[in-house]
Picture 1 (tube, each protein chain N blue to C red):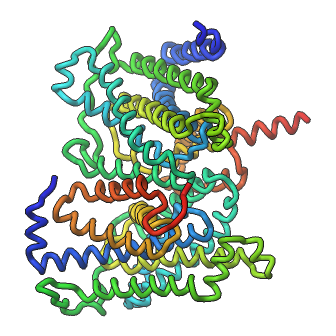
Picture 2 (picture 1 turned 90 degrees about the horizontal axis):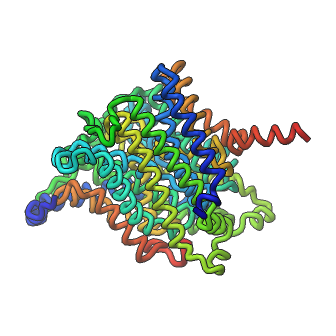
Length: 302
Length: 325
């Protein structure tokens, strides 16, 4: 099960280590984008969006179609994010906001039904086969050489862009007017609406923003992963693990936890391929036992 | 004896329904009612045991099908193992049955010990996450479980005590007896002190603590018992299909079980069973007319959840009591 030699060999060679680290960072950063949307929605609305993975899928498929039309990777990523965001606002206004104050059973069922419907719609529109988007033309360049390892420009771009988006989100929530209204509404929504602010509108926008983050992750990941109906569910579970480790509601926590998980995945695939999932769950279980609120949140989750 | 007197009515009803179920096997020759009912026994136990968590104790689990699948897989794997079969001979089925339930119980104790302390939302998501963990183990451990294909090649069903489970009538009667016993156990638990403790925890956990109930322990015991009953459902399904399939561990199975409970209503003891029958019928009808079962099921769920806002059975009962006034 454990192949320590292969692991040591890989880290003995700079090139292999660089390759594993970049692929770990890619996985981690994409996971961070999805998880930051999940944690943002939870932090403000106190709702776990069980259908979050669906918006990842919507983003990827929208981006794929946009790429076929425009042949521009950046534009298609934007379309993916926008599509997922609009769907998210629709989902929030028409469906999930109706069961905010009901027990969690209803929220689970609404999300379950939404996932079933969208998965089947994707099958109807794009077919059931795996779709590969391929590396976009803009990024068909010679890879960078770092310590003998090869880093494709697309990977470097993905890591940087995710980081920029992450910083922008933190800035948006902590420094702007939108951010302060949303944070205030999370604490005391009736008070904020008494000040003449339309709280439901801000909640819907925030929900849409969270979904757009999942969508942009799906769109950015489209060239490096294959598209399939139901692709969102795996990433939902992983991003949930991220939010548990990093702490619900904490975006910096999500960043650190996502990178930990990404590196676990990429390094694990060399040393203990069968145990990668197990290790992720083990980390999560340990965090839950010793610090149930997550590594970056103070207070209690009970 | 005291137990018997206390639950006399329930026991009489159980025996009567068992006689009814068995008479179906004897008087109806067509295989459809038997096959349909066995699938109801199996998924009914999944839904009923899940309702022990959701309805009795207020613990909304989104990963209950994991234990259903674990029971089914363990049972199937034992009965495919030559060594196991040659060691236990005629007793194989009984021992495999007991061992599968015990294994599920141990696994549920570990998962429960991690999850039960947490609040509602965390609990729901964590049980889901652990179910997907089991799913990924089943799918990736191909040499043991057959991966995507499921446990193929059929399972051995050696005869014991004159019961031959390869015979469809014997199998049906065996399953119906197990089913009724499990339902009776759930009923007794529901009406016992343990059941009252669970409802108190559901309604007011702090108060339960002050009254001296060890909340964590009671919840964990509830979680483990519910999981073991779910595993019996999986075992029945494995007996019926002579195999085990990874879809049982997939999250949609848990979603479906939650919807069964919702359809029948969580406040009525046998509600989930009614929900199981309703959902099976809905599935069969939808499959007859459309290949997009998921789309239609999803829309039905949306209509029931957002339109009625309660179980179909509860809704109808309310309508009836209103019209009487």
